[in-house]
Every structure is written in structure tokens, then in C-alpha cells.
Amino acid sequence: MVVASAVYAETNAPARPVEGIMDNSFLIEEAYNQDAGAVQHIWTGAYGVNRLSGPDDRVWNLSFTQEWPFLSQTHQLSYTIPWAINDQATTHADGLGDVLLNYRYQLYFDEKTLTAFAPRLSFILPTGDAERRLGNDTFGYQVNLPFSTTLGDRWFFHTNSGFTWLPNAGPGPRKDLLDTMVGASVIYAATSRLHLMLEWTGTWQDRGPDAAGHDFVALISPGVRFAFNLPGDKQIVLGLAAPLGMTRAAPEYGIFLYASLEHPFARQPSASK
Image (cartoon, rainbow, N blue to C red; front, top):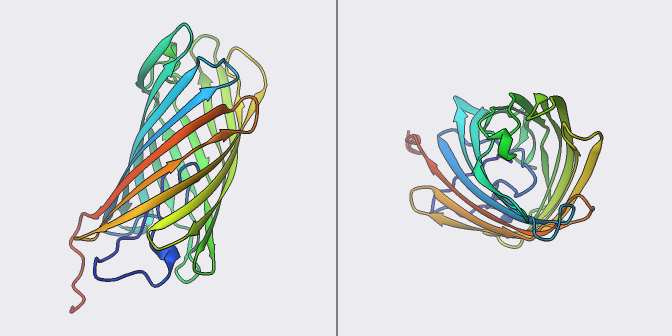
């Protein structure tokens, strides 16, 4: 879900390869808040074939996220707008999902080791059509605890843990839904602009109002991302990954597409002042 990347002046190369991209991972959240004076726009698309429902069940989950620093890097505000396209053997549904409003607090950040911890609290709005299984018809909450660090000049490590709570969710019979999630990723900075990635997530998903218990959804996802550093302290990052299901409840296979644009929205102080 939602993190920032450093903005670089086009005349200054990063001192270490790990400093070239400090961006969102794909499935795992990195613990670096947005720099003061810079905004990031993020587009993602996740396609999967659901082995639990049948080979004809295919899903596109699209999203747009915008991240803003609030007063300083310590506080970050963002929102996420999801859009789903669900193709099943007998039905089709597409439309807006439940929108998230996010706040992240940069509780700890060591600039030398790039070790960081940034808890996030999100409010989930019932904007999706629950009758078409695009939403849950309730206000909800999500908490995530992302931790990030580096080893040497080329390796990133990230871990996540958190939960999503949807009280009195619908449609139909009402039930409190609770999903819990853990995950980790390792990233190798081949260069300051090219990263090789391996991510893993495990989620205990509530089966919903019509059933008891949880399904364990585990994914492993190799991927790659590449940065374009542009004049005006702009950075574009493009990424591609191939998630693979590790449990029966997970999508059997899929593809993940990522694009982000980061740029200043406020004039930066001159070095001469």
C-alpha cells in the first residue's frame, strides 16, 4: 500500500545504490514517509486468476494513490481510490471499491542506515456497491506497521504486519469482518535506478457474512522496478511483478503493474541561502 521516494536534483547522483529509489514496494509497504515539499502519485494494477472459484474467474484490481507530507516528513496524508473488474463464469461486475483515507506517522528514521518505522491508520469509506461485491457497506479501519532497513549499499529489507476491521459488514447477513496480514520483501539495488525485488504476503481473510472461519491467502512475487530521474527534481518509477499463489485460496497466478510520479509542489530553499 503507500510510501514515498526521495526526490533528487538531476545534477546529483545518489551516494549509494540503495538511495536511488525509496519508493513503494508492490505488495509490501515501505516505511519512508513523503519528503517535505514533494507529492507522489501512484497507479497500480493487479490481475489474478482465482483457483478457489474456478479457472474462469479473473480479477483486475486497479488503484490510484496520492501521498502528501503534512507540515513535515513526520506526518503523511494520502488517499487510495480502488477500482475492480471481476469476471466470473456467469457474472461480471466492475466499479469503484471502498476508498481509503490514510495517515502515517514517521515514528523512527535513521538517514544513515535507512532504518525506519512508520505506523499507518486508514479509514475505509463504504463507497463500493456491496450488492455487486465491490464493497462492504460499512465504515472500517485498517492498521499497518511497516518496518524498513538496509544491509550495506545494495540491499533493502521490509516487513509488514497489520489488520483490517469491518464492523457490521454486508450485504445480506451482517457480520464483523477481521482480516490479518503479515509480509516481507527483499530488494537488491543492481544500480541506483534498477531494483530486483522478491515479496511475500500472507493474509487470513474472513470468509464473510455467509460463512465462518478464514482462508489463508499467501503470495510470493518476484518483480523489478526502474527509475527515470527527470529535470526539476521529478522521478518516475515503473515496475512489473508476477505474483504466484502458494495456497489454495490465493490467485493461482497473476501480473502486477506499477507506475509512480513524484515531484515538488513547493519551492525548495536555495542552497545559497
